Length: 315
Length: 315
Image (tube, rainbow over all chains, first blue to last red; front, side):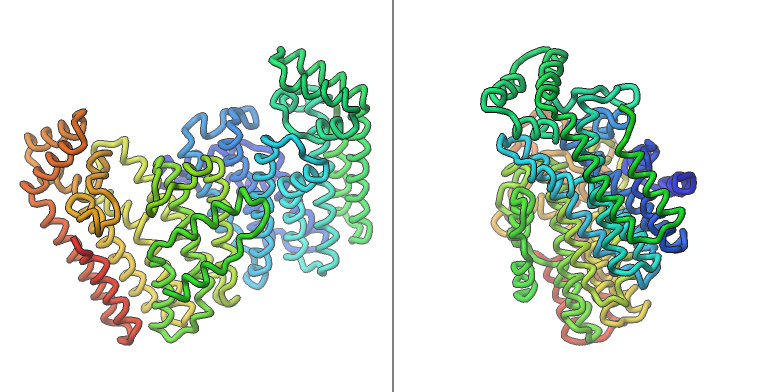
């Protein structure tokens, strides 16, 4: 983790025009968990690869991830990210669009630093991942205007928007380190399931989390009527009468506090929390299962701990 | 040209979600000169390369070019492109941003289809070109708010925004076909100079062009006070009194017709048209000179004709 942070700090953004590169620097200096490069490094270590071979791809993934956040924040009109004003707020929309474009290019530039014989496949996998994320973001936006989103569609959306990047980080690390196709597939699947568990956990914490440890105010998803695992599960389990009740609450011009309290009460009655916890346990279990047939070593242990830690975040 | 158009038509966009891919398809179906892929193919043919080896890169360049137009139109609030409503007008800003992102990824996907042993350098050159274009667009936007833009800064901006993509198309085609470093550099320089001549020609036509052949109404640059070769040359040659006159015209809340007529009269008095024509001739000459030391064959002849045709467009 320290190495990755140091490597990110060492990326050189002191270039002209400053108006293009300052927002890039600002975005990458905002911290975050550096989860994706960590996964790439651990996957490489699991197969006894060299850290320096995978580092360019690990950095590319972090820069790409931050690019998606930058553009998503413009599209979602989000004003705060990791406790700081977003780029389009601090500068403007055009700067956010163009600096984001430049970050995507920087991601590809970093990626091109992997060992040459590995580049063609690494690039292909990266492109597929990047396309998946765009498709996931588009579904997410499309869902806002739709009232008939199924839980299955939702799971596919979060697979694309969250899981494929984690899975790609892991597969890329494993591939560069020399893992077999079957091993790459297993560690990819570990990432997919980890991402699903992680996103459902995020949806759960938005309702039941402790704002102090969750890092942001709870109830945000309820207030904007976001189709989360919680809401879709509630709508799916509810009787027609309760369904109407939910829809009334969501469209009511109520106080924020009352809206959150009413929806939480419905979630309580429908045991949505338990259903979310079951789903998290299921996907975490699947993720851990994927690790079984892979080498058992320190890196594997770290990935196991990561799965447990990420999906049992303190509520 | 026909082959390139056919290859672009054969790109498959019939994927989900439609809301992501329809704008991509719409953008690529809008035609245009297909100049960049044509340059890549001609450069390859000059060095007796195989068309199919360079085609993936040629298509990547066309998709990338169209991506830049899509995002530029959002940033510039342009409502019409090639006679049709722009994507952000027909759909919305978010769709334009995300479909543009997806087009950039598609460009990299196409690029990855070049012969594997050529991929590392092709990718590096592509990244440098893409960064140049972002920097050029940023300078272009920065110039809007500045009153002290020099002609030198302007030439650097159009080199980045227009020339490097043409130059990259040519170098990529030549490199894949097996040209030497020195030959690649010459054909790259041909592209740089061609792009400069082409852009100054565009600035000239915005004032003196015939709307019927120019393809859009003239005077657009004058109305939005854009820092073009024409305006910067005028400001550079003008006496302090005429300079004040220009600034008064540009800030006046005059009718469009009157503003255009007044500025054109000043350009006439300062012989800006002749100065632009001299610059066009100079850069076209330099471009043609670059071709001298390269193989003389049909492809070279086509590049020579292109330079003459592009920069002697009917006024």
